[in-house]
Length: 210
Image 1 (cartoon, rainbow, N blue to C red):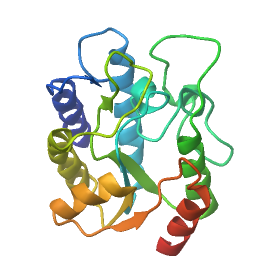
Image 2 (tube, rainbow, N blue to C red):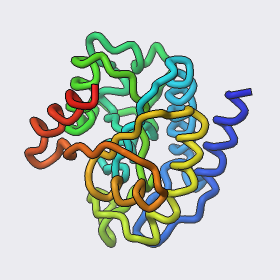
Image 3 (tube, helix red, strand yellow):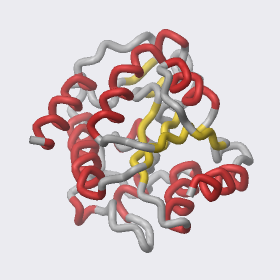
Image 4 (tube, helix red, strand yellow):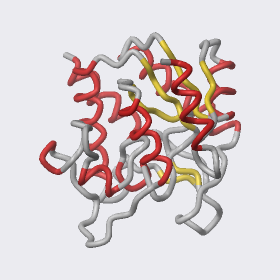
């Protein structure tokens, strides 16, 4: 039953029409996205079994991370190689690259988040206020802040995630996520985004919640 729900959720993401200068990494526009849809399915299915009580809500996928993998708060390197002590990722779990390559990209945010969750033994599922990749005009390898109308598009999948996982504690990673959650009247803890020198404050924030 849950698998059917997850598949239909991913299907809805794939068919979502996005705004200009946004890449929908689940759409049927390119063949590569098939791997990303499958990766997200494996992740959500595994997470559902773990029964996380906490959801970390970020702003939007980054071009070095979820844009490539399809999985929030991951990088190609983390998805393929996992991390010591974490039993969630890796090729053996069925994850695959959208395009085979020798040098796998890492993403600092993803590494910091999973290291911190491991350290404090927190089981949390990750999602984004806007689940697609907003980029600057004519530059796919860039990130930008999602616009108000884009955050509106993200509300429905966010609410669906909270409902499917029956989440009790929501953590906003950064201001945009907090803004969306407040608008939806969802009470949340806010922590600093770990990027751009925010690592220590992020770690402190997670420590406080646990």
